[in-house]
Structure formats: C-alpha cells, structure tokens
Length: 101
Image 1 (cartoon, helix red, strand yellow):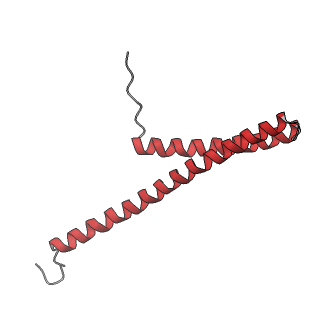
Image 2 (cartoon, rainbow, N blue to C red):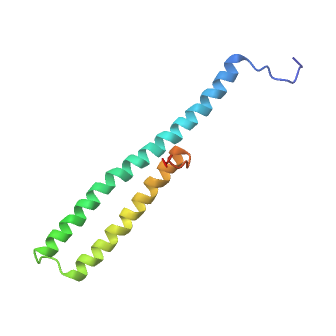
Image 3 (cartoon, rainbow, N blue to C red):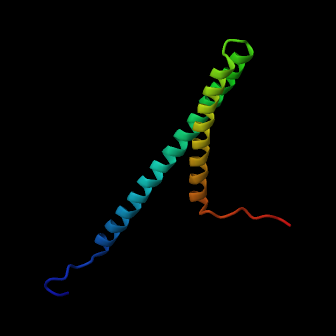
C-alpha cells in the first residue's frame, strides 16, 4: 500500500460492521421500547374510560364531565393507536397483507 493510504485489515472492517449493527440494534431497541410503552399505556386508558362510564351510570359524574374526559381519553387512544400502526407499518415495510379471491 502507499505511504498515505491506510491499510484496511479484516479487523478494521469487522469493527466497522459491528458499529453499524450496534447502531441499528440500539435504534430497534428504542423503537421496541416505544411500542411497549404505547401498548402499556393503552390498557389503563381503556380502564379509565370504563370507570368514568360506570361512574356516570352511578350518577357520580355528570354528562358534561363524562364527555370531556372521554374526549381526552379518545384523543390519547387515537394517538397511541396511530403510533402503534406506524410502527407496525414500518416493521412490515408497508406491505399490504395478501388477500384471497
């Protein structure tokens, strides 16, 4: 090799590949954690919605309060479901599922 040209050894190449894989693994781990967090947040929101409805039926919560809280919960659930769908689409590559005719 020339005087100013660095020698690319198998060890250097393997180290470069490892760093790319490591970066991708960290990114995937972050995405996996976000999916887990989103899914974990969905159940308590659904439970809160059910409790509010039960409280309304028990005359403990007036209709205006029920609507306000249900609208808030619906908005957050829509966001959670949208983000989960985006992760699912990204994971599947945006491919549509095959259909049978």
